[in-house]
Length: 316
Ligand SMILES: [Zn+2]
Image 1 (cartoon, protein in one colour):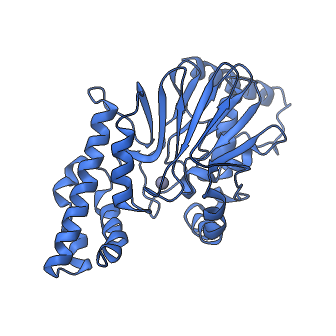
Image 2: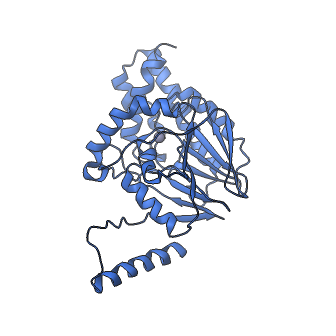
Image 3: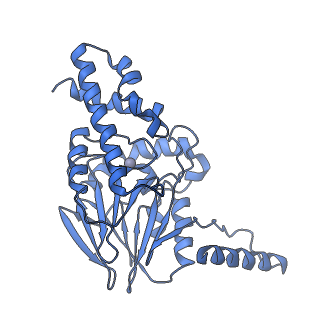
């Protein structure tokens, strides 16, 4: 309600300026992202489940910010500077405290290209110890494909790399609010970082947990299954995943078990296909098909997953 009121006030202000002839047409008013308060000082924007190749608008992942007494941490920034600016506007409707940290949960383009909206002397960028290198390696291809996907909406976007690298664990203090950042071994990607807020026992998993949207594998499926086993031991009372949100009846542990079931079924069935001499092309249509009913965008993402893991598993 609070956010809705703020947005309403901003819109009224703009209309008022326009009506009295003071509206400056060159000023771009990005519309703020819709945020939902999920705990004391924690706000989350839910991205839409669009595929990157089809209907992608740069706004598909969950984006959050956390407010402490001295400042704010942003967790993931969306797929373009435009989304980053919309996020900044949403933050400013709620708090004027400085943005001390921008944390990226991993290298994927839908999570990082809003960083540039937060570049300032006060803001540090934080990621997995391998994130800067991964960004370097992928920079050209991510710029090219994001331009293709988003066209004008990607204009002016560029990569902003971390200034703080997390090896194992790092704690950051926002003022009476400590966030613990954990860098993980290769799983969804080789740059996965989780964030834990001690004050509310909230855990951000990045894309180590997908809800609703089919999990996509760009790292190591066996590593991911292991990391998920470890995350299931977390004392978290609530979890903010990289995509999607829990249904009313679901616990985060159940959501993670559902993802484990998909990943273990996929691993088993791709291995079985290889040992039976079933080609990758055929396995793309059959492996883990029993899991289809539980996931959105299954046909596209599951085929891609088989394509990713089959060649590596052939050499086991
Ligand atoms: Zn991802």
